[in-house]
Length: 299
Image 1 (spheres, rainbow, N blue to C red):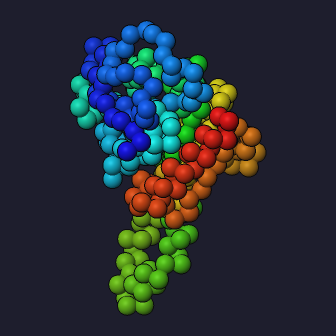
Image 2: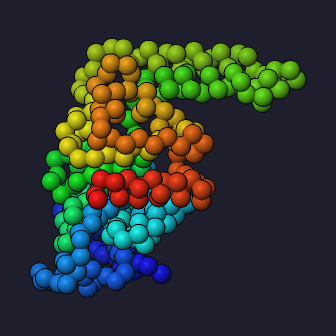
Image 3: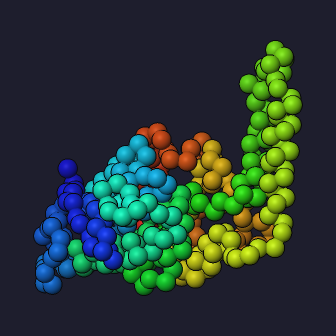
């Protein structure tokens, strides 16, 4: 085994956050936290960035299919220290369950603890899935400790955006579905229900045309992306409406299109993968893409 794991407890504004450090062997510093301020021979090694993984959705630090655990071990085995933390109200951490937009203090506490545990790191990469990626964009751009971001199927959900993505991608593929035509030929297709569903999606898609009371989530994500100067790896699943909705933000001539085509952005599309990369092959694709990206910009 080329890594070692240790549990850590972080005090964050009166809440106790529980996390896991996955560190490459030999260990760069003694564990567990807290650690004394001292110089070690590990500092003589070329510093590498650490990876702080931000879980998306109602998940704790292991992630769906234990993918965050498995990815963290892959990254550590390749030489990169990794931390995973349960946000407040999730998993083993204390507090009430909250929206991802409130996770800024948690991310700040995790960055501080991670930097204390492995002070020789060359900054930290935020690695987030779904609304974990969105939390990275909202909070990472203003923190000098964050040197890069890996954004996996970022959550940019609005009611109209979801409906537009559904109309554009689901209905288009549905027209060519053998299952649909089989139902039609067998007389089992409910045309009335299908038309009502289509009308509801059209209504929701048009609802976003009115004036906004406050900046929308896509606008705030755009501000975070534009305000971040470091490299970004964007990974999008082909079989995921969340990823499609985010990709659809980059309309021709838009600021999103300019940002996603910027040289600091590396984009990887995995056409067959679902939202959580639930097969070993898809997870390995994500791990390999992350390590290759790290090798390119960190060398």
